[in-house]
Length: 299
Image 1 (cartoon, rainbow, N blue to C red):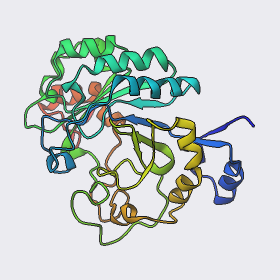
Image 2 (tube, one colour; image 1 turned 30 degrees about the horizontal axis):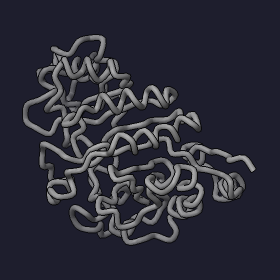
Image 3 (cartoon, rainbow, N blue to C red; image 1 turned 120 degrees about the vertical axis):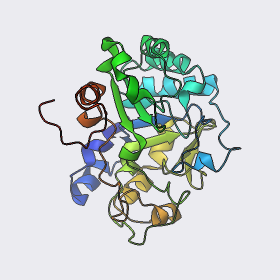
């Protein structure tokens, strides 16, 4: 029987009965709308909310190009047309990430290619090479006092519409399923949309059941031994039970991603219009600051 596909985002808002009816076929695959390939995990910063700041040995991994190509070929085979990213617990501009972006574009042309960076290595020449390689969207998060936000007026206009930018204290921050900080006092027991919408592959090919699982305590499979469809088919029910908030494991119990205790739980998403580089540039020109939360009219 042919493999059937349903996108995770299309299950949001449906009743449990409707989801059961749509997903009862054992040949059905739930496709995430965010496919994260953690190409490298080394970083040039030490941010307090990132486990890399505590574990230098884990942070020195780069995905072999042969493994990356295998994953891309499998995505291309199903004509994956959602968002594909190239970051994990690290800074992708430390390596020639353009080579990976170009490969992805050649093999999975239907995917939207997005990159997250801290911007410390982002020159205009690097911007040009990233977009020339086929990047569709760039998300810059400024962690330092001075940085990308302060030179928005220097960014070539043809790139501004493809860039989103924010300060690190404006983003949603989690305790990485307990890897950083303490478990929330008020545990969230509701649905975990990340379980059906986010898929994460680490540099060694392992797939954690949760993208916040830095230490790979619970995995779904490994691309060195399995295919994408094998991993997704075998974990279909596992993904759904987590989505429904059932069979919560040790990671779920410690996670504060959706907990009311998390003060950043309602922070704008990375692709919010508030993070548009065009809008941030207008703020900078009007007020001398690119911060969103200001009393500014008629921008």
